[in-house]
Length: 140
Image (cartoon, rainbow, N blue to C red; front, side, top):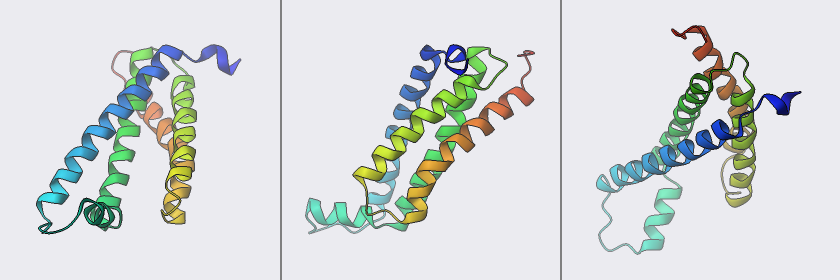
């Protein structure tokens, strides 16, 4: 049934790619943010607290997550050569589980941010798979 159609290989590649993309992008984001701040005389804990409450970092972190999810779901759908959305759905389930872990680890985030961690993965993964299938040039 549904589980028979999922390629564990492509879902795993998708999760690893998602993690790599978001970690690298978050590092760049933090570097850009720190370059624009006056951090002289602040302790590491104070800088960390400033970063956690920064609207710039919060907004761009969400943008990074959305773009990475779309890109990875499109990649998984394209490379797996499947006509169904099973791999994108498997990726969405894994990202939703990752979002649940994130909610547990970061309870201080706003409620809308927390809800996004639960509902956006499936929406974005299916959108990425749909766009891939719609605009595919290799007849997949």
